[in-house]
Amino acid sequence: ETGVTQSPTHLIKTRGQQVTLRCSSQSGHNTVSWYQQALGQGPQFIFQYYREEENGRGNFPPRFSGLQFPNYSSELNVNALELDDSALYLCASSLPRDTEAFFGQGTRLTVV
Amino acid sequence: KNEVEQSPQNLTAQEGEFITINCSYSVGISALHWLQQHPGGGIVSLFMLSSGKKKHGRLIATINIQEKHSSLHITASHPRDSAVYICAVPRGGAQKLVFGQGTRLTINP
Image (cartoon, rainbow over all chains, first blue to last red; front, side, top):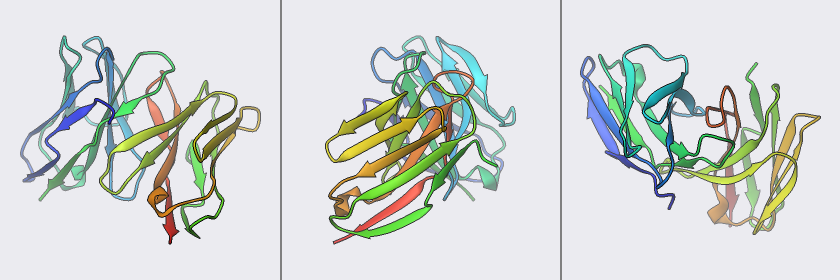
């Protein structure tokens, strides 16, 4: 067990709705990265937060947004859900330099 | 062409066989990660290496920085090793990982 927990584990939403996914970091880790993994694909980088500030973003539209809190936990928000947003969403916590990343179990989002 | 390429995409073997999964990347990196993903979805970090070789139990990872190539080996494979194995490299910051497409390994008893 990595110490990174995500909630919820599974979620079904309707197209057009909004969703918030949560990630609790490993103790002491101030960097959180979010990834989207579509079925049969490798994870794709969404964005990273370091000390409550966005620290880099992948090729995702603005309706994907995030927050990091003083305790380093994080949220991923997706507005105006589309069917293609159906995926496994993974968060990974780490220290900011070249260190091991610890992944949560993921949240499986289904948009219908 | 993806920055990180893995081969093979699928691998089926018998219990006890020696397994090799390959990863090639096209960019300069400071380290490479090998990860394991089971059907439930969660990802476990197996290795992070920047040179040479690392060993953990029956798993061995090697990297050749000059050739931009890494391999993950499993000795005496077991059905519980069945999973997707993914290599990933950091881009634009230490933990902004770019992933390979994964290798689905199935070990039959």
